[in-house]
Image (tube, rainbow, N blue to C red; front, side):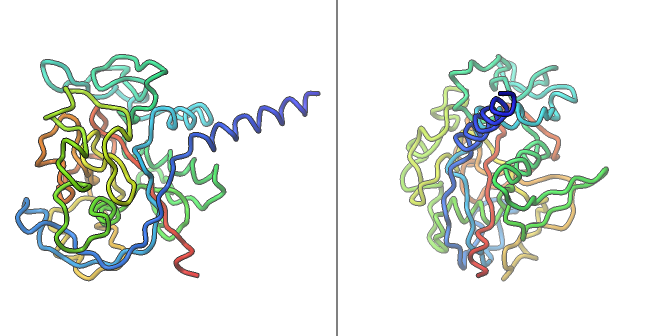
Length: 298
């Protein structure tokens, strides 16, 4: 009876993982021009890159999906191990102790019925650990290897990871190389995403706005999204003609893309770039996952 009970528990946990695994969209890849000629300094020069086939999640990772990871592993986030996270109120952003992924952007404990919101207050490191766990659950190769003072990444592994900056922009622009839309989809930003003009100073559930033509939601607005790459303002000059560029080999800060509920339309453009230290967390930052389509190498 004990063995039967353990088996039932195992299959229950497995079904929960499958149910909460991010839904992925297959992207064909190909030649693509990154950047925006009339944008900020770090959005130029325009440069052609080649992207292999890959999968990208339809939405940001939700609090419900992140909870399964936490419950399955006992993992403690950087916010829980450190001094909390940044929250937003009428006075602006400020750090609050004991604030973590269970909380809203304003520092309140999130009700369980609202776990279809993006997971907030997660660092780049937290997101990478989630990716490794998701790879384990799916029987795929891990991408990230955590060392005492660094993180190594095997981007040829077939497991889950954060999208590269090039993959993120390719998905946001629906793979269109020239005459790209300003935002991630066809239409105005108000139709496509949550930003300072319509979000009422708060984050919203995933997939409530119109998807882009690839069926991917929230790439413009709602929450900033961690990318795999280290950030370098001048990296585009080095990336001309690159195949699957993945950013500089080292750096201090990681790339964020997409803008958030608290940003103007300028920051929600698909070409816009920003960065934060990899242990940074606040109520406007989340992430989505991607993985290589290794069938493209068959």
